[in-house]
Every structure is written in C-alpha cells, then in structure tokens.
Image 1: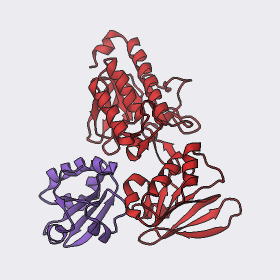
Image 2 (image 1 turned 60 degrees about the horizontal axis):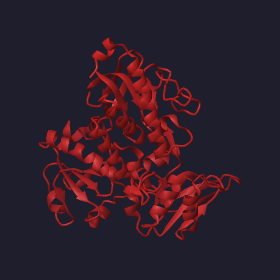
Image 3 (image 1 turned 120 degrees about the vertical axis):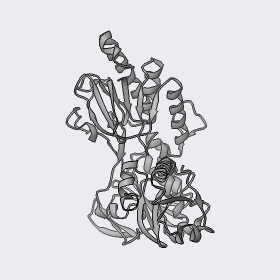
Image 4 (image 1 turned 45 degrees about the vertical axis):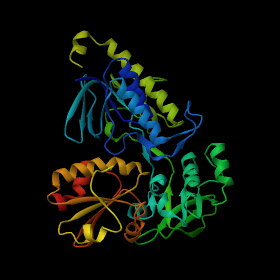
Amino acid sequence: MRQVIIIGSGPAGYTAAIYAARANFKPLVIASSVEAGGELMNTTEVENFPGFPEGIMGPELMGRMQEQAAKFGAEILLDDVTAVDLTGEIKKVTLGSGETHEALSVIFATGSANRKLGLPSEDRLSGYGVSWCATCDGFFFRQKTIAVVGGGDSAMEEANFLTRFADKVYVIHRKDTLRASKIMQDRALANPKIEFVWNAAVTEILGDAAVTGVTVTDTVTGDKRDIALEGLFIAIGNDPRTHLIHGQVDLAPEGTIAVQGRSSKTNLTGVFAAGDVVDPTYRQAVTAAASGTVAALDAEHFLQSLSADVLAGAI
Amino acid sequence: MSAAPAVTDATFAADVLASDKPVLVDFWAEWCGPCRAVGPILDQILAEHGDKLSIVKLNVDENPQTAAAYQITSIPAMKVFQNGEVVKTVIGAKPKPALEADLAAFIG
C-alpha cells in the first residue's frame, strides 16, 4: 500500500508529485499510457510559465517536471486508471493492466478533455480533416484552406501556428468578441492569413470521405452559409475529466470536482483534487501547478494526522 | 516512438503491399506527441503478436508520397494492410487495451 497515489501527469499531477516526493511520501503517479504530460504535450511554445523568459516548448516543460518528480523519488507508471474506489479508509485504484494499487490518500489531477461540437459529422470525419491537435496535423494542410473553431487562447494559438502551413485560416467564433488574452488576440488579428468569421456557429461539417467544408449559422440572424475548406481544428474549450469518480466524489455546479474553500479537499476524507479538474475559471499551467502544490500539502497534513499503526501499513 | 522497422516511399510496395502477412503501418512524425506516446504500445503488441501481424513505421515528414497516397491528414494513423489493401484504420493514440480491441481481427 502507498501513502499517496496521484492520478494525472499534467502540471498539477507532477507538481503534486514533486512536493509529495520531497516530503518522502514516495508517491505513485498514474500518468496515463498515451496522454502522459497532459495537455501541454500538444502545444508548442509556452511563453507565460515563469522562469522561462525565452519560452519553452510544452513537451519539454512537461519532460522537465516529470524528471523533477522522478528525481525526488516519485514512481511514474504509464498506464490508465480504469476504476477507483475512494470511499473507504484504503483507496483502491485499478489500472488498464488489471493491477489494483492501494493507498491511504489519492490526489486526483485528471485535467480536462477537449470539448466537442456535438455533431455526428464531427465523429465521422475525425481524422479525415477534423482534428483536435494542430501541432500533430497542421503539417498535412500545406497551402490549404482550413478553419479553427473557438475564441480562446488555444484557438488563437492554433490559428497562428497553422498559418505556417495553410494558405488561409478562418477563425470561426460564436460571438463578436474573443475570450483570448490581448496578446494572443492581437497576434491573430494582425495575421494576414487569418480571417475571422464572427457570430458564427458550426452547425454541420460537410464531406463524405474527407472534410470539404462547413455550414455556419449566424448566431444573431440565424442565416446559414457554407464555407469551403479542407481542415477543421476544434478548440472550443475543455470539460473536466470526472467520469472515474461520478457517484463517489461531489461535483460543483460547473462540473468540476467540488473542493472546500481554497483547499484541495473533496467530500471524501483522504481524497484531494487539483488542476483543471477543480478549476472552471483560470486553467493555466501555473495555476494547475500551484493547485498541485496545495493538494500535496493537504495530503501531507492528512497523512500526518493518521495513527502510526495505519501509516505503518504503507510504504 | 516505436522501435518497429521503418518503411519508406521506396520500400513501401515491397515491405507492405507485397507482404503475405497483415502489416500495420504506423504513420508518425517526430513533432507529434501522441505518436511518441503510442509507439511503445505498438512495440508491445508487436512483441506479443508479431507472429500474426507485422508492424512497421512510416515517417510522414520524410515519406510524403505514401502519406499523400493514403490521404493521411491526422497522426498517429495506423493502417492495417492485407494483400495490398487497407483493411483497418485506427486514428489517434489509444491505450493498449483499446488498440488491442481495434486490432482483434488480426491479433485475436
């Protein structure tokens, strides 16, 4: 049995691991088999993480966090959690391999998953022009016309990145103002290859074997029109990844895991949550990392409150 | 990334299309994070089922002809070829159990 298991390996999970490992709790990090490192693994330059004035590539930043956690004794497993039982004093975490690990405490840092448009054509054409990963797939759209859906920082970053390849990038956004930060907006607005399509919702993705266009509906007038394009990158936000703990851990009205005040404490004793999975508002690498710290310190405090007998059962 | 043997535009016909055994081609690139993540899983599947299914990788950056011929627009893309035809396509990195389920017809 472990003292603490950390589920997730984004900035929250790895920072929690760094703190828990330095406190000698030998954390076990379940990092995921194909998404280890989290969302930043699919980004390019991270310009707003303090300490890197020249910027750092997302995958490199996450590689360094992993290295830092491992250096202090965190054990990192590249596997997926398929089930959890968090209600008892001993928490059980079952993996894709079939193994079940036990721990006295769990830090839940599963982040968030890409939000879908919710169109049947989106699933059908996923991988055939519909993409969620500009860094993976932008290369295939050299000299093509494509679009990014969304109005946040991710959408602006993807649109700017994709102009390296595409001749033209539409940014299709439901409103007439952007949610993105000023610097990201300004870059996109100044980019001659980017054309904004305001007040427009993508209501159909066209194409049989591959994307040939989209139908957009004007969110003010209701008018529909088609735009011809070959690639559609969807960046309309994320939803907290909570499916593993439904029915066990209380959620907030926003769908994130409910925590007490500024702490990481959930409704279950010994279960803590950190990062995007608790944060409907800020959702930055730095705030996730800070939240991971809070969770590790809360877990540490909890473990120290347990009797020596209980602790003796854990490594 | 995968340690599977590499195929190229030049060797694709001989190594993949002419193979007697089903061949999974992992279309990948250096810059693609999910491709690097799924590589070791393909290595495990190859180690366990190499008698039934060959697995090779094709770098889309260095081999644009083959990538274009099979209309690759999203990677990782894993295509199983049998008798020179694509018989299965899996797009995106998936955990091992999910990938094994997708490939059950070839490794089951």
